[in-house]
Length: 286
Image 1 (tube, rainbow, N blue to C red):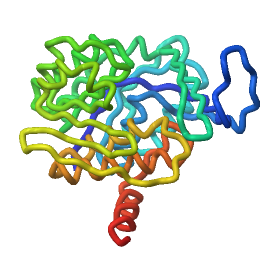
Image 2 (image 1 turned 90 degrees about the vertical axis):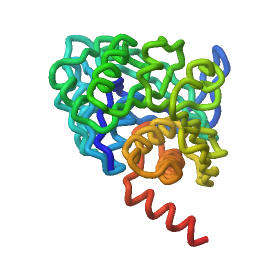
Image 3 (image 1 turned 60 degrees about the vertical axis):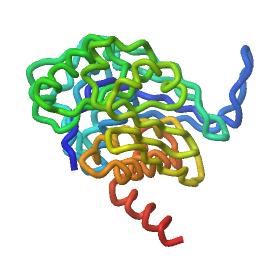
């Protein structure tokens, strides 16, 4: 099992469930509302820890009540939050609306995520880890700085380039792997083809990994979908945690983690390693 450092965003998520999305200017009745930890970085850190990896999260929260809620979720999952900065202002916030089919609309207010920096504690954590996992919900200069530190210390660098944006050539050259969905793969095709390991999530069709060992695929796993909000993040965190396994095995476990996450509401619903084991054993026994 790899040791993982995640440098990224953390939010308080407000999740509203409704039968269908409202049309512009329309008010509809919702089914339920809940509040919990979100943010792509924190979601991926939580998934890595629940997958069994020793996991450190580097990010920033505000000095508001939301900070305790979101950090408590990471601590409960076993994530080391010692490098997290507390700064004046608001913790990141995401308004998530989920319809009856499990699809979602998300509005994100960055808050403290816009102020993420790397201090000595965060830098040391990156240097000591097996895998660094990054996304693009924090300033790009911080992502690039973290990748430089990782490369200088032989730490594997994985990037989930979401929300999608053009990638600097220097960052692409520092990457060992990129985790993309089909839309991101098309948008970033010129950059993606220069990365040694390309892992593509295919929604209900599963996932594909292409690297020096060749191409492996993991088929779609049928589940009862409740909320797809955190499925991609659970996939990325589980992939990082299992990076030391052979490509086909780590892809399968990541695929299972993503599928299981979609069976529960909320972005921080990543399964444990034992839940993934049970799911895969049950599937194999059919």
